[in-house]
Amino acid sequence: MDDSSEVDKTIHAAVMRNHPLWKRFDAHPMQLPAPVTTKTFPSMRTALLVCHHARSRMNCLDCVAGQASIRDDVTMQRPILFDLDRTLVDLQNHTDYAAALADLHSLLEGWSEFEVLDADWDAPTLECMAILVALSNDPRWGPASAAVAAHERAAIPRSTPMPGLAEVGAACVGTPYAVVTLLPPDVAREVLDHHGFPVEVIIGRDPGIRAKPYGDGLVAAAQLLGVDVEGCVMIGDSSWDRAAAVDAGGGFIGVPATSSAFASDVLTASSLVEAVWMARSR
Ligand SMILES: [Mg+2]
Image 1 (tube, rainbow, N blue to C red):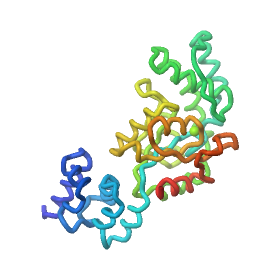
Image 2: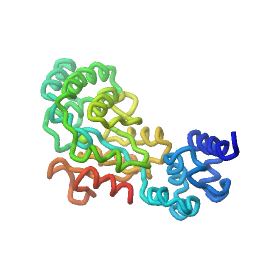
Image 3: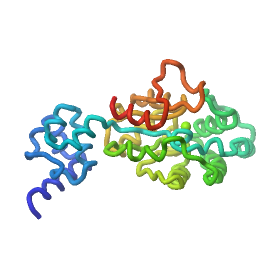
Image 4: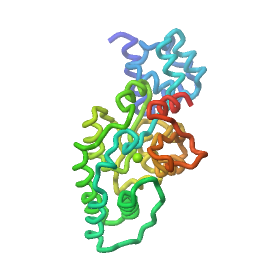
């Protein structure tokens, strides 16, 4: 093994394990073995992750001087946390949440001790999600989630990609991203795979993670990506997504599915792809 490949492995390990080398680079990027170029890193993604954590665009530009393709990307990359339903794929409008709610009522025998934060969803969808959020520390969460998931999974063949989904992968090159969704992670993975948009990091419905509108799922996703949640931008279609982003301390860009989705002071994009580019350039 020659010296450059040894350096590649060392830096890669530092990035992945938050090694002290990482912290030294964070404070003094130019202390890394010079010259730091694309060849120094095991992949473009690692180079971009390192540069992201340096948190200094000028330092990033210095350390990759002469690498125009990386320089262009480094100036526009910020971790993105996507909502799934009606943001990447529309499963919600093809799921029979009225039937799911009837199943929940049967299962919970009229239990109604939950609050509902408004959203531009139909009433059964809103009530199903509010019930699941309220049950997060309750032993009934498991059967309740499974009852709803049966209807969500059944809708996968009928689900439709949101406009621009086919372009999102290319728009995200070099940008760490994850999905934070109210769907169960296995259903989320299935529906994303169904539409040809596999995502490595998915935080879904989980009794151990308070769901949106809490920010816990965003924090968990950021940890898996190895980034600070405050530096992330959430892209989503609903007020619950925005509430979660605010709770987590991250940024937010709305891609409204209806005219009543957000208050007028919320930053929104006219399309999913525009939202990605806005997030990367902020
Ligand atoms: Mg949504």
